[in-house]
Structures are given as structure tokens and as C-alpha cells.
Image (cartoon, rainbow, N blue to C red; front, side, top):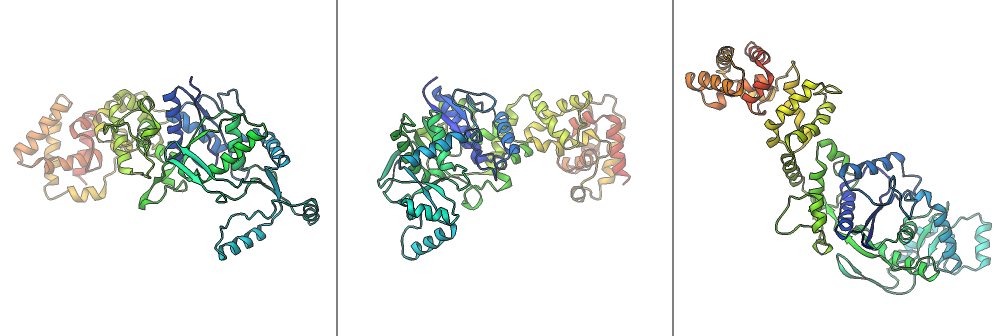
Length: 489
């Protein structure tokens, strides 16, 4: 193992979204490429928003994606616990030390006072951040506020200095002195904020590289200042981690992909039937490339080639069509047996198969997979493609019927029924031969006109898996019964 230590530290609020997963993937790949350590940490200090359900969803998400972690929940490690809700005493102790050393102070300003001064600053053309009103309160002023029944937050005293760092993705970045106002470390109710717990835990867990979204770039000078304060008071031996800020992921209309959009949640892609391999492959392309125009690769191949220099700092656009195409490539990359195994849960979910499926149903799924794999982009599409094989009550799509059923349809179905009744060996070759002879050679029809009504009778749809193979799987009696039913309709 190298000394590289990276972390993925989501908050358990709502369902994991693809932007979050991309951050996890890039950290995982960097750790695996360098032989370092991938730390999974849960930032659950916001009791009003965090939930155990979301916590379990995060763990399940990484398990489903195959992003294994070296330290964290269920695994343990030398720097646990890895849930911040179990580290509250550490944060309280750090706040006390920062206040005692003068790096932080109690702020008694009310919400109304803060808003009033913020509006005044805006009117006067000054920065709207906190103005340091409580920075240098004496004991008399502090006691007066306490006597009024005021509560206080704890703010960090930002030094009057420029903050410059070499971003691993964006190069040199500088925040000028005074650009970052004093910020809150701890709420009035004693709950610690992200601005405190994130760097405190990174320091405690010996994190060496912080790879995170561009939206957190503005918090970096605050965190560097806090690291330096912890070093000064002997709470952290250093060095300060190196930072790299990943590009935004843009959605429709070039707007930043919102985690509030249901179609950006990981659960949406799982429900649609994306493979974890396909989704990770596409997410890797949002800001990174393997090189040489290669766009199809596994997460292991990504990790082998992963370097920070290949990350593009410009915003990446999430293209649903390309995501589907790559997922379809992965579906076709799977062997038929594995694809059948992965299809079964979706077919059960959609009511195509019994729960649990019978051995005969599982066998039929395996038989139909070669007929549909080339046509699929997601596993969830299978139910609509193969459902007709697993029911005796196939429904005819009205729109498709309107497009297919013409003046010759009754004649076509009657001729097909006669030809197929005479077939002795019910297999694909014999079925095709009988229908081509009867409908194309004898009736002189074009294939589309000849086979359209038969396909509609068998599958209920205008578009389906290959017709003759489907009829072999469906069987003689059921096939003939469906053609007869549509003929007599």
C-alpha cells in the first residue's frame, strides 16, 4: 500500500445521485491506481435531515457498483468510527481548543441582525459576508448577551492573509485576504457543521488527497485555515491534504445536474435496468478519458490507467443517449447465461415471471436471451420484449394493429394458419419455410406485409424479437391459437 489516502464522505440525505457516484468512482480509481487506501466515511451530523434509510442506501449503492472500500462502515479500520454521529465528542473538544486558543469565538448575533447588516453591506457595495461583529467581545458584552437570553454559535477567526494552493486539477488558485469571512463551526444547539467536521476527520484519518466536486471549491480556503490552526495548537501534525476539484456535471439546458431531479438518482438507473458496469463506464467519461478515443472499459481498466492529469476541468454534460448506448454495449458484452441471470429480477418485478420463477420459466429466459440481447439498451426493456412468451393472454397493441392490419390481413392469417398446421417439425427453420412458401411465394406478398399480421398475433406488437425463433419458443399449440384468435377477431 502507498501512503495515498482518499475518502468518499457523503451525507445520508435522500437517494444517492450520479454526481455523487462519480466522485466515489474517481476517488476509488485513484486509490486503486496508486495502491492507496479508499476510506468510506458517513457525514451524518445533521440530525434534521439524515436518515438510517439513506445510510443503508449508500452502503447498498457502493456494494451494487462494486466500489469496495478499505476502511469504513462494516469494514472498520484504524481511524474509526467512520460515522460522524459517533464522533461528536471529538468535535466538541476541538471547538473548545480553538476557542481557548483564540482561533474561534462565540457569536451572539441574531438572525435578524445578521440579515439587517447583510442588506446594509449590499447597499453600500461591501461584501455581504459576516462582518466580524462579535470578534472581540469583552466579558461585559458577553455577559450582557447571556443575560438577554441569547444563544451563540461558534465562528472561526479567518486570518487576514491570502490563501493559495495548487489544485490537482485546476492549477494554482488564490483567495485574497478578506475574501472569506469568519464562518460558523458549531450551531447554537451544539451541532457541528461541515466546515468543522470535514477537515477534523480528514486530519484524524490521515487523508492525503481530497477529490471532490467543484461546488466545494469555495470552502477550501476555510479548510486550509482550519488545518493550519489545528497544526498550531498541536491537534494535527500535518501535512495539509492536497485538493482537486472535479468538474460540474451538466444536465438538460446546460444546467448543473440537480440531485433533486429524480432522473439523476442512482435508483432511477437501477430501476431502468442499467448494469453497474455500464453506468460506471459512462460516469468515468464525465471529465476523464482513457485516451486513444477508447470509450468502452471496465472500472478495473479505468483504475489501471487513472491519473489526475487526464481529468478535464471543464464542465461535463450528461448525455442520456450516450449512457444508454454504452449500457447496451455492456449488455452485449455479457455472456448469455449471465445476462439471463441479471434479467430474471426485472422480469419478476414486472410480473412476467412468478416469484420465485419456476425452472421452466428460467429455462425459457435463457433460451430467449440470444434473440433480444442485440436489441436491448437496459435490462428493464426485456419485459416488453419477451412478456408474450410467458402468458396465454397476450394483448394486441391497438396502435400497432392500426398500422399493420389491412385489407389482406385476414387472408394472410388464414394462409399462415393453414401452412403452419401442416408443419411436422416445429422448429425455426420449418416455421420460416412454411410461412415464406405460403405468404411470399404463393400469395406474392412482400415480407413486411406477409409477416406483420403474424407477428402481431404472436407477440401483440409490431416490433418484437425474431418472429420464427419466437414461435419455436412459444410452441405449436399456443402459436396456432393466437393466429386463429386474431383471424377471427
